[in-house]
Image (cartoon, rainbow, N blue to C red):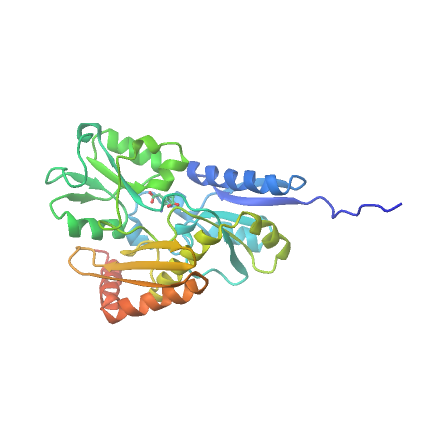
Length: 323
Ligand SMILES: NCc1[nH]cc(CCC(=O)O)c1CC(=O)O
């Protein structure tokens, strides 16, 4: 008689931020993995990150390198958790030694969305009145929208999605710019008033996708995670991340992207903008999807030649001065 030898049943610990969006994303990942691995127990461990605690300081001033990820990364290195689920856009392009971005899952709509106060429910970006107060905490959104719509008043907004929407509804803002994906995942698609097309504003690197990080030498976890990888999203996001890495920007610099994949061909468009919306450099590259990171680096070099570095250096100096 042959006996079936199975590996001892393992419990895998997933790390997540505590925000509602983070939990929805983490439980979605758990559900997907559970379908492929019904015998494994997946436990969710939540942690507060620095970014969840500092809610009263403009993000642009504190910088964002690892603000939403550091505590989870320490948890992985100390074996407290086995992997962490992140909004890919919040994951820095350079990871700590010993950790890896194991997989990227299928992306939601990566675009930004306009959400309006009820009194403007018949308006679009193009028809909102001069002086309308637009809430955004992202320099990328600010710079690109200011360029197209210099007649609006832009105002910083922080807090989780529900807090932001409450501030909008209370009349502190006339409209907000938010990631469509966050609203969709939280079941609030009905608040999406207008999807902002790439001609108006390019989205953040990795927006709308989830990135799963784990210990680089944990082959067992990496093999398990591969079950939920989405190769087209991976190729697009790796191109976007390589572009950002070469320009040495984080989520909080005015750098936007757009990617399209058609068969084997990947097209990447990128923009670097000054905060006042006066200077914009933009270009597009195209090539084999398997060469995604090369394409990203190539686009970064192209924009550098057009003056992207000068724009970024100006912004870093301003942020350090605290203006
Ligand atoms: N920086 C905050 C953040 N991180 C991920 C999302 C939304 C979901 C996503 O982009 O994957 C958001 C909110 C927003 O930008 O409106």
